[in-house]
Image (cartoon, rainbow, N blue to C red; front, side, top):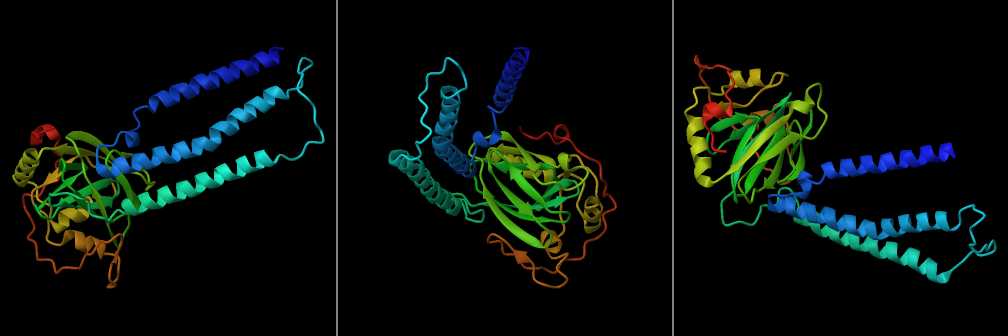
Length: 322
């Protein structure tokens, strides 16, 4: 009797623990998308969960009912049929239903997989903005080639505008992920990947590296700030006035293993991203994944900046619009 009470108490504790854990997941970022890619991924998760639930829920309910119905108890009056072995109706049900669900799930997954091809440009009347992403130990470098600036562990983008991310790595392989916008996609040395994302509304989003990459992999997070186009242009203008410039020598120091806070650079070396991509190819053409197409460029000699420093700047110093 005492043992039974302990088991019941343990089951009650587990139920309460599960409820508390699930309540903490009620605001799961992947289920609260803020962009077209994230929304389609959320829909696929919901559809797949419902289809799987059609099988799992009845099975779990029947399992509980059978255990209760045919329990070993003196008061149990359930009929005993040791020679029963087949039911055509039941065979049809538990074979037909799973087959239908598997076929449906396969069709739905195929459709969404094609629609969510990472390098597929998003439909929009606005021109995409290119941002080049380099994963380092243990930090993220974002270069804006069209604007000529760079940031570390901070990403600002305009709302309702497609962003073309070009991604590589100058460190162990990592995985670029902004849960509410979509993703994730691997960054790898000697490879240039392409990922299109978009933020449909102004907001502050969480970005992270979703791959184990050494001692400080947990610190490879970055802030994503989606703003109006006016605030984005203001951010570009303010960053261009920052005294710190990213030179080739400065990049080599930045690429050394170590953590970093948010940093801003008003200039970047020409062809920096292409140099990083081809750094480990030993003269062989770089592999371009998911539709990326990059060619090596002859970089210009860059003078060493005497004013180069590595002081970190926070958002209050930049007076960024949040």
